[in-house]
Image (tube, rainbow, N blue to C red; front, top):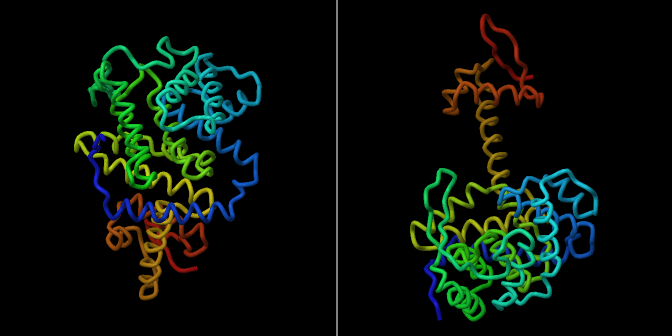
Length: 325
C-alpha cells in the first residue's frame, strides 16, 4: 500500500474529536435533517463557492437563478459549469468514493461541454502556476496518473486511520497528482465531500466549500506549505478547521476567529475603562501607548465605544478627548 507523508499531531487529534462531537450535535438538533430548503440552499452555496474559487463569474444570486430555471445574463461557459456541478452534486449518493470509474464519470459530468478531455485522465504533462506565472508544482507524469489515482483511492479505503484525516490527505494528494487537464480543484473538493458523506450523510449538505472560498488565500498557502515540506500535515489542519467551522456555522455557533476578534475588542475596552477609573479623560495618544496600536486603530476603538454609549467624545483644546458617559 502507498505511503503518504503526514503527521498526526495534537491539533489534528483535537479537531477530529471536536468534529465528531459536532456531528452528533448536528445530527440530533440541526434543521439540516428535516429542511429540504436549507439543504438546497447549502448545496447552492457549495457549488457557487467551489466554482468561484476557479474564477467562475456568477454571483450566488445568479447561481440560484440558473438552478431555478431562470435566464441569467452571463458567459455561457459559466452557466454550463453551474448546471454540470449541480447535476453531479445531486448524484453524490450514487457514487462509490473508492472507484476510479466513478471518479472519471464525475469528471465527465462536471466538465461536459467544457473541455475536450472530459471524463478521461490527461494524456499530457501539466504544471500548476500562480498568478505571477511561477510554477508551484508539476503534476504526476501522465503515464503514471491512473496507477497513482487507483493507489490513492485504495489507500483511503483500506488505511485504518479516521476518514476525517484520510479525506484531507486525499484532497491534498489528488491535487498533487493533478490527474485531469482541467477541473482538478472542483473534483478534488467534490470527492472530499463524497468521502465525508459516506462517513455521515450530513456532510453531503454541509457547505465546506463556502469556508474554503472565504479563506481562498489561506487554502493555497496551506497547499504550498505542504508541498514545500513534502508533508501534508499543515493542509490537513487547515481543512479540518474549515470543516469544523462549517459545522459551527450550521449550529449557529460563533466561529473561533470571530470569537477571538470579539475577545480582543473586549480586552481593549476593559483596559480603557480601567484607565478611566483612575483618570478623568483619555486621549488617542494614551490609547496608542496602552494598547500598542496605531493612532488610526486607537481612534477606531474610541469611536466604537462612543457608538456603544460607553464614552462621550468632547473637544478639549485643539484635540478630542473621551470620558465615561
